[in-house]
Image (tube, rainbow over all chains, first blue to last red; front, side, top):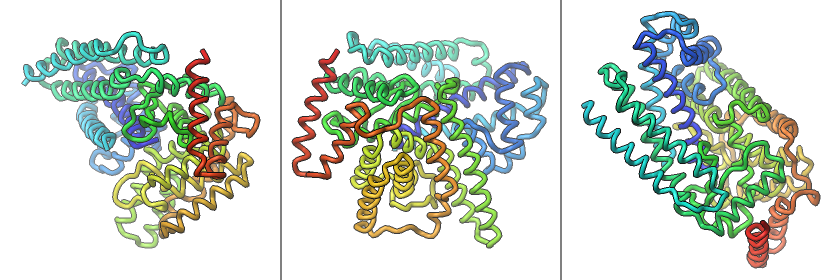
Length: 117
Length: 385
């Protein structure tokens, strides 16, 4: 497969993940603390926190980015994943998701740029 | 600023409507699925743009950044829709594109491909590739006139196994499990190598280089290797000859023994790919063909005066390559796919292999032979139904 196709596959998955993060961000801002989206996001973040490994390709890229950004990696705490998976309020969730949304936005822009060659 | 964003949303909504209107009518039925997908996605974008314009949540100042992010995602998706799907539909060649689609359909049936056959178009600007959302393979404009690159279609067929759209399909779970297990192995093997390098007091440059290898393996190499193996098991020696041909003409992975040092790489080194394909060919029982292709590859390396550098074996360790050869054949069969068998296979897969024999027997007369075969194939696929 040429580079275009490979990059598009990665772009598509990163874009879906960014949608999920934005959806949860909006829910948290209107103080909705439990939903299937939050649970799904929390579970994936929790796997990154515990094992560093997640099956989905886009999440693997996020895990690599977090590993290379120690300040953001240290911001991902058990409190955040617990809040998301168990529907608990937490002041740490929104700032972390804002950072994550930025990482994903940069990732998408860069992937599309690589797609164009 | 909100008004400015709303103006952009209105423009984008108008563009989505214009794209729907741009889809030609009365196209051959081979393209119905692409039309349906493009229309559905454009309608979804219009709905999302309406929400972005009207919903009270998106009027709040704290949500403007999210609003911009969503608008950009819609715009990027629409750009791809316009330049890939709608352009393909607007430029369909009723002979060549229909021929190619029937040929791909035949290949899918021949190997008992477990997913929906992709739609194929001759509008590629970048060799063969597949767009997951549209299940659309693009090949170069003249590819329907030649046989030697066509085995690469089998490689493209394997990419959808790893697309988000097929996450819930249990019939392809075995091959997805192979990739998942492979990812874990990559992390373990490279972490171990990193520890050994640190113990030898290698600098931060080495650590960065290993990070690049890991990202390359995870974002693309693992999938590329598995797709190569799927194509070898489906098409037999024809796919490996085809890859050697491509590498000779273009050099896909950079230098044959390239190892990422400064940036992530989308394709593994050509030697690593050829080496894996030859192992697969031997595993399938084509030892003599593998030896012959290996000789030609070595001949090319000698001409180019290429040999592996000090990190090649560390970047492409045996422990990550050999298990894939065995695991992919096992799951290939577990998914019910048919491995290539000479003289017992579909006429098309047989022809793709015979083409290579004809090419090597007499490259000078091959051109005329190939033209005759293509004429017969075209007649068969265009007039057989």
